Image 1 (tube, rainbow, N blue to C red):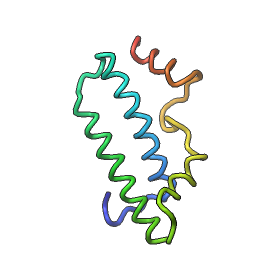
Image 2 (tube, rainbow, N blue to C red):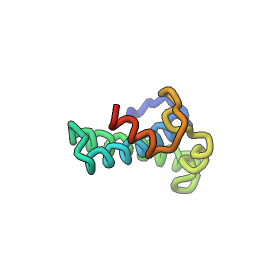
Image 3 (cartoon, rainbow, N blue to C red):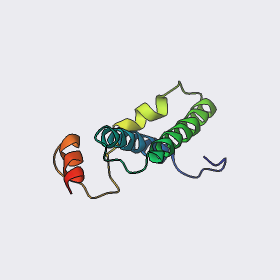
Image 4 (cartoon, rainbow, N blue to C red):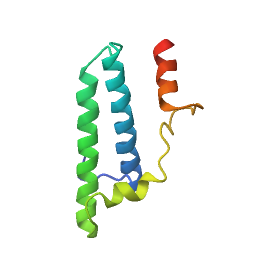
Length: 100
């Protein structure tokens, strides 16, 4: 994360939550031998770490407890909000992606 990160706390928290969701999906694809590039796991983990580091720095600056910002914005998170939404569960969507 850049020192002059202009994103809001909610945007960073939602990015971390989306990345965590993406990591689970990538691990599932890896277990099913459907993941083409295993380097994506490292990139996703690094992004999560950077986001959590930025959130923690903001928590310290605001005098909040550890994990407070992520917990506060978890309720407003919608997985894949940037992507078109699909009905069904996470695993159904994963199976659809693997079959398609």
